[in-house]
Length: 66
Image (cartoon, rainbow, N blue to C red; front, top):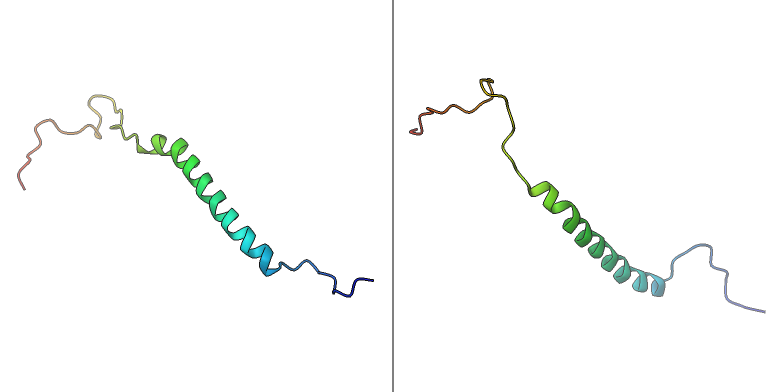
């Protein structure tokens, strides 16, 4: 018979050393792909479209001196 104790769901050191680099590479790949997909959508900054005469329309004769 097998004299080794049965593993009860524990992770061995060898499994850990194998899984950590794979997990890190997977996380980096997912982050890279997500950044390429979502990044351009978040970086597009447009001025808000407000109707003419609204209180949110920027002033045209605004004083630029502090």
